[in-house]
Image (cartoon, rainbow, N blue to C red; front, side, top):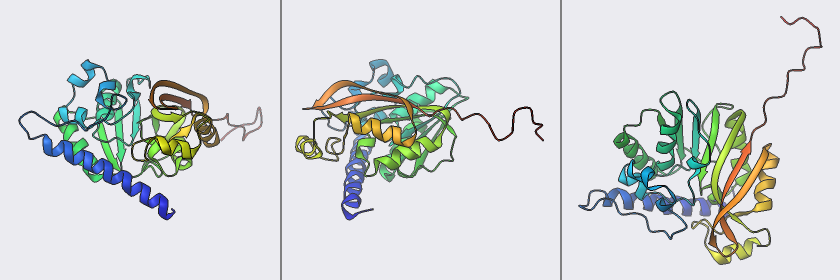
Length: 263
């Protein structure tokens, strides 16, 4: 990893560690946890009121995403879900409810402070079918072909190695598995320099891929059925978008000739 990439990753880690500490420390105040300050394009207001009201206040306060991936991932009973960059755990907890007791929801985060907050939130919610993992989204600490659905909420744009994220996501998904991601995506006409003029890296703007770059990255990893649909603007020429794609089913076994006996 280059020195610049290392510096960017550390800046992201510090930003979200500070956000977790802010929520944790304010949680003991008389009025409850203080939400991390974001504008109307990011945060817990993008979730339905009835969803927010059923979660620990700290999970809601720590929400920094640009959408609600659990609302578009079409989660089903018994599925295994992985949230990339799970933060305070809001999407993991919502996913755990949707997949039910026979399913499981994993959260992956590189920030110790966010992981501690997420574990506390899971305990408060009484969630038994969740597990939080420490690691980076470029090197997911799970076996191949074990996850039904990968979700993420405004985190992939923060990665310093997006091809690795797409490749790792493809690896851990079972054949036929899918992604349902909310992320910031730039117009194809914006250069990387123009994106950086509109916001910084840790603010989810400078590191955003264009629509064409996002599609090409998913295709290179092997995904099919790619849909990238903008939902609302977050800056001039940049949008929160819903990203869907599928890992193709395994190819048929052609190792034996037609009519041959198999042992």
